Image 1 (spheres, rainbow, N blue to C red):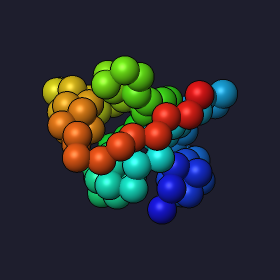
Image 2 (cartoon, rainbow, N blue to C red):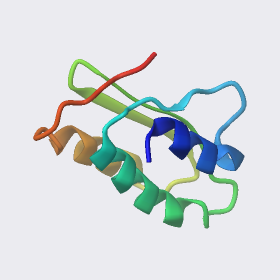
Image 3 (cartoon, rainbow, N blue to C red):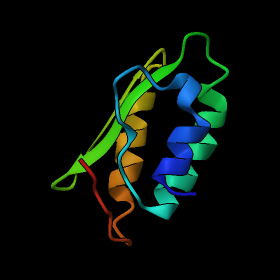
Image 4 (cartoon, rainbow, N blue to C red):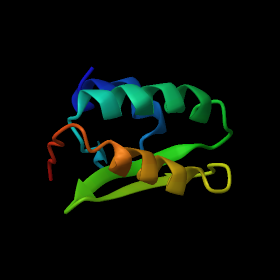
Length: 88
């Protein structure tokens, strides 16, 4: 699965006029897909962007459990064994 497949799969939860996942790393997409299986069970869950720039990663979403956004950003950042591709 790539970022386009991911965004298509979760388009119901992607906020209007936002890009969604902007990383093309297969391991990251697989990790996020697993996490999103739980997120979509949360009432009113929406995501906006998941992106990176200069070894800094951001995950913008509504209605996540406390600390979950930071956990995901840190796990993506720690995945330094692969080369990330970024899209804007």
